Length: 190
Image (tube, rainbow, N blue to C red; front, top):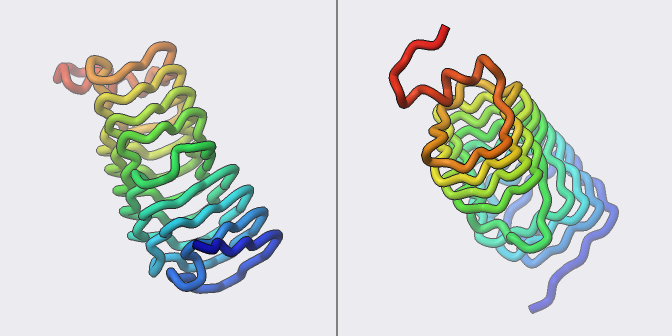
């Protein structure tokens, strides 16, 4: 199977589908205002790429490799990241919409979520060691059986996090976030 290699390209206002992504390796590429909603991302690699204002809403991921990738102001509503390649991967989100996204059982160590909406996102079974959740809305996000050691939730809000169902050694929470840690006890924190 032949893979196309695309290096140092800039893409603006383009719509992508399987014909222009399948079996392709993109390295050091930048994408501005591109639409990826018609993609299934089958055997696609992005290395040291940046995405700005791109739409991935409800995109299907069958196999994608993300290495040194940054997403800024992108829409990932209802995207399932479970089939993301776990070998040598690194990706970060800033100002992104990730509502209903699924990160089930992924190793997300040291990932950054900055100013993101993660309403009803699913992190069940994920390794969130040293992950930064900076000013993120985590309303109804699912944290069950996660490893969140040294994760930073100090500036995020609206989360409910059961310390008995997650590993949170040295995780950082704000005083305002205590109510989300104690929610299961049905007590009032003032």
